[in-house]
Length: 144
Length: 136
Image (spheres, chains in turn orange, yellow):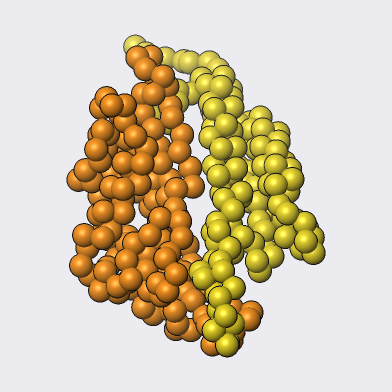
């Protein structure tokens, strides 16, 4: 079976879920794109870019995936979100052991830039959410 | 008898080397500006227009130094970040669900695509001055 880009998504989410320190801070889990209804303290992973580079030997010599990975925590105080974001960085930035079905990691995962924004709810002043994380890029090559 | 070695033309080489950053900047500037304009136009066209604030808040900030040029594409509308990255599920104070806004992924992917294209365009400019580009 040809390599499946979804395997990269799954690998990123799996490595985040496997980190007990991160899950202690974001106990509702790790979600792709959108959290399940009711999830309050969680991590959101979303793929923002995927580019395939050709080389002399293959039309898909290597590929770069860029994800936005953020801790989402309900609070007016951003301390917990900051701690969770630092944990995300610890897990992902420089990770050179990420196992991806059908792909080989070519370089350590790198943080491209950090992200932080608060989200007030205009319809409910008691609902305030902190988003904190970053853009993370992976360079991989297909094994099949 | 003392020996003397005289090399002519080094002053010209040194002058050319000193001017190289400025020369490269001048050659790169139109490419950088065109890329920023392209990204801005594409993003502007992709934004929905409700009040118009999201689209109208998109602008460029240009920083030019003797050795380089930088164009930053900025959207300083408060809702720009929510539109780009999405929002959480929201509820009214009475508990009624108001749903969420999915990530639109308009600004970031476009800028990444255009930045890659710019890099490809800049390599010949640098190589034309005799420099080698590797590992891009």
